[in-house]
Image (tube, rainbow, N blue to C red; front, side, top):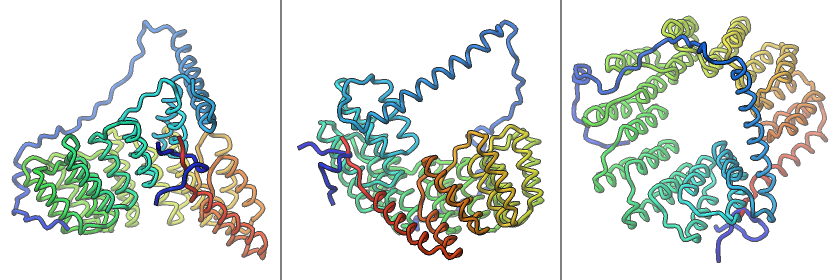
Length: 485
């Protein structure tokens, strides 16, 4: 019988790299011309063609807007129809676009419902590529049970799994913390001639191990790769270096870089540079961070905007605000445009130490330079104002947001609820809680804990108890497994 996804009424769910490193001199790399081209920066003045008619320039945006609105309406319609069982003669384009959008935004519940709708269409043909995308998404959303059942559905449709499908399944298990199943999947791959694991499969497995802190498994993975004749790629080395850096295993991180250079086939790149300076900067080792920044410059690796963002954050965490601002000035001289991430870091750092004047200065600069603030920006501003006791400025931020199209999220509402909770304004908290639901932001444990604490502080024990019941109900609903097609 064919397995079904997303139909709760019909189904219940089934249950250190110990490499021998050779001594390698960095001078060799410095003396060798790097194969990576250093990025050049060009400032180009865009010219409007004298032949372009003003009418054409005015009409085109209207056409584009109309097309976008029609597409969004079609996608929205498909998502509504996904909950019904009677639609089986829909046009392919809106269904496929709705599925792609749900996958891209990691909305796995919607994606699986739309996929169920897709399978009912008379024009539907099963494709491994679709299953690969869905499995990768389920891995990011940490839904291993759904991934397992989806794989069964694929087999029931007569599809033979490809290398990409198996790799996506390994990713789904690994990112969900089920490393045993990930290793078992790799064993299954070895028995299929066209699906033997490659360097990309093992790189994903290594990434999962480092994220879970299972560095003891790295040796096993390297032994398997060596036995199968699979050599590490630049991505593999960068994954290991990044994992060791985030775990503050600096000696192994540097040894991995030595092995990378010593391999002769994999040279460090911008990702290696960013992993190194993030590791040392995040741990407060500013001198080492600066030393390695210079080392990579000598290797011919030039920084990118992410590099500068890491430097700014590291200096901010170390309370070295002069150097933080000097990085911004350096970026300006080298024609690197600050992004929303850059400004968010600076605003957060000044806000943390209560330097409201500087924080507001950079917020104004952000807007003057045409960089649109996002939910994270406003969250940092609210936190700083709340900490400084400027509740009226929190009100001002909320008014600004009402007149904008900023997409708000649960962390933002949690931040604002905390601000009003500390001020004892439980009435405003209740209004924001309703606004949160209207904007389809799901309350989480932090939301309920913040409100319960505020109600208890005001002696409103009955309201606090009601919220606790609400929280338990919400948790039960979020734990319900979805099944579909």
